[in-house]
Length: 373
Image 1 (cartoon, rainbow, N blue to C red):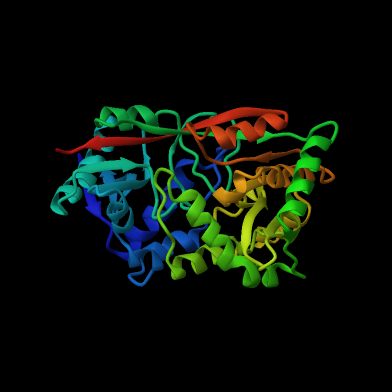
Image 2: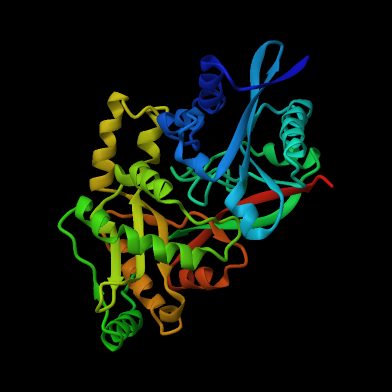
């Protein structure tokens, strides 16, 4: 017998958060989310609920937890698009179509109760939450920023009546044998012609305090036209910084400013902490968390978190600044490669950038959609 319960009790909250760790125990490619961040989703005052509301469900079979799913109404996104959508998120399930269908029925019933007309996902509260289902590349280590899943998830979702809405591609970018002087010439010319300079900061704290406002302004202008994105509230901005601050290294962050200190372009990569987090099961107080310090200081792999160039400067060739930044990162001693994380399949501009480097498209992810009316 399959039973679906809304997550309400403290025990259920723990079961919801801990289910992936149990399902993927000893899986060499799975990387857990930070447990504290996931548990905080159940707090009514969580900053995500400034513009969203959510419900969480568990599936039981023979009195054992065998699946989970979250339903999110992202109000800002619905206002932006003029649509009535619910996002499904944090879907995990045993290979059982009936269990999966029961979970999606719970999300769809919630959607109808709220007057919604479309369900899509996997998507989180914002674009920096884990999103999209892995459909290719199951034999590659996940990044901290994205979620790993078993291959059978796709058939479970499609069996519940969902179809493709959009795909994302992920790349590994490898060091070039010889530095591309052409990119250097273009980047240097852009810097000189438009009176740009590289932002300076003595340490990570100063960097964040000095440039966070300008950086997020560029993020919102550059990313707002893209699928699934929403503007960040001030509280969400602070939460994002808090979540990623531990993993940042100023040596892999760059800001370009004009003569008035306005941020016009940026790029930052995060030292990969995937292997360290695998040993902690997402518990930040785990003794092995100290390994993060080493991974951040001397990384072998970088996760390319975000890059952005204001449109008016992109038209002036400022993308060369990001390519120059990438060349510098890949020249770091002992660095094996940079992983791009998610690129929309139709974002030809960003994908063309990677042609300047040896690369492989090693993963593909998908967001599914189902119309309820």
